[in-house]
Length: 593
Ligand SMILES: Cc1cc2nc3c(=O)[nH]c(=O)nc-3n(C[C@H](O)[C@H](O)[C@H](O)COP(=O)(O)OP(=O)(O)OC[C@H]3O[C@@H](n4cnc5c(N)ncnc54)[C@H](O)[C@@H]3O)c2cc1C
Image 1 (tube, helix red, strand yellow):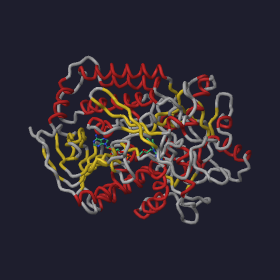
Image 2 (image 1 turned 90 degrees about the horizontal axis):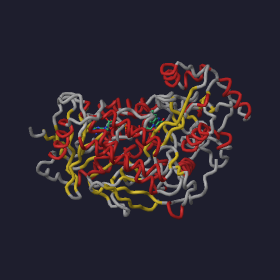
Image 3 (image 1 turned 120 degrees about the horizontal axis):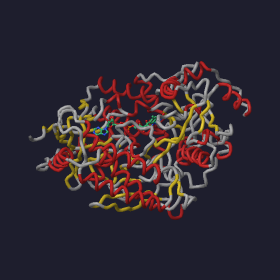
Image 4 (image 1 turned 60 degrees about the horizontal axis):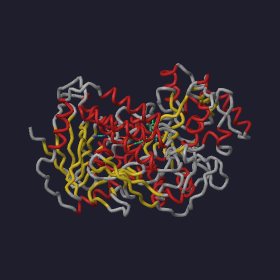
């Protein structure tokens, strides 16, 4: 059967914070369809806990320039500083705009938005932590997502829920739309448009222990890669220091922002050794490595692969007192500021954080790399930053790059709304100035054939077991610490997994209706490809920077490596290229904590 064709000016793939913000703006001027494989409010943005960063200065003095400096320093100087300025300057009015849309932020007694501390956010003059994370308890992302979705409904944005986008229609250097599967029926649909934006989120599912939802399989990045777009800085993947032991479920940095501390088996607050100034609130790469080293040295709790995160009031108050801070907390305060966290640990671990410390280990969390864009969300395809007209990306799938080699906590939610808005506005302008180009013949044929191949597969390995093998090897060989030889082995093993994937999988369900087995098999293809791109980019970068820690090259090397990686897919191989970093006010210097 021929696919059903829908025509819009612009198509936005993804209904998380980035997609919804862009939709809200673009739909003011042009006809927009938002396509989402999940019901919109199930998007991972809804799981974000701790806060959204903006230098409002509601609790203590703050300036957007300090936010910018912290972001650049946190990025280990790989962020493009022109883009960071946009992020931090526009953060302030986008947060206020969210408030005006009705987002129920926590409040201070004077009625202003409440802000708390988060890793790496400082007063640049004193070096002390500054309260910059605007939050709604520990459900900030949930509130953002609900608020944006309500606004989209109010403004009559058109949604195609549970439509899974599987291909981009590109002819030369023009964009003609996307191909999607209606999950309920298995039918193919073509969305014919002048512009396409990907806002499909991250790919933490490449690793074994992750904070990411099951759906975070990097579809948008993989689709663009297959259609000739390079992926940028893929070696930089953030491991958040505090995932629930074994499960990976995130315990927000807000716990440490409220005074929580990390403790090893000897009862020592070990971050005092690794980051004497900012301690437990050092950036995530630093804290994750510290936990890893403590565990490696045998100081994990009971010799196992975790440490304790302690937010019991008596512990927190003891450290406040030691550091000369006047504030004190009690159990009721923890319950009100961290209700979801308390709920998670009670439910999943039987641990009550008010009475006991929580077992935590680093968890794969956030993709700093992704589809390269400029500050208006336009996809740029080479070291000269040439724009591919009509193609946009925003949110976690994009690499603007504001996070460089390591993202600061709260900066992703800021990124979604700041660059979501800019992309939406620019995309609407583009559509108003462009004609709808015709669809090529058989636009969906290639991907339909791939689906038939997957469905017909009678291989002897299940997608589940293949995925597990990939996750285990990525964790062991392309994880928190990296070394050349194991990474080379990882690349070879990933190739072998890719061959097995091509040879055919064993699928339980060969039907069409709600065949999630089939959709997950297709998603696995995306994960395998992104894992290979990550390993290929990582083995080439012979230095340590941000989240990319090489045991064989422990130092940052600005002379050779102060540059962004671009990875292109060419046939079955990957080719690397590099582009310069935009430096502004802040010359690279050593990070001191
Ligand atoms: C547990 C957790 C806590 C976090 N806490 C914070 C925090 O406190 N502060 C902060 O700044 N950041 C936080 N982050 C990071 C931040 O939440 C994410 O980076 C961000 O929400 C990603 O938003 P997004 O709009 O890019 O994509 P997502 O919200 O992940 O949405 C992706 C969308 O794309 C759709 N999609 C994907 N593939 C397809 C496809 N093939 N076809 C159709 N649709 C598709 C999905 O249906 C979904 O709607 C947290 C992340 C996690 C996992």
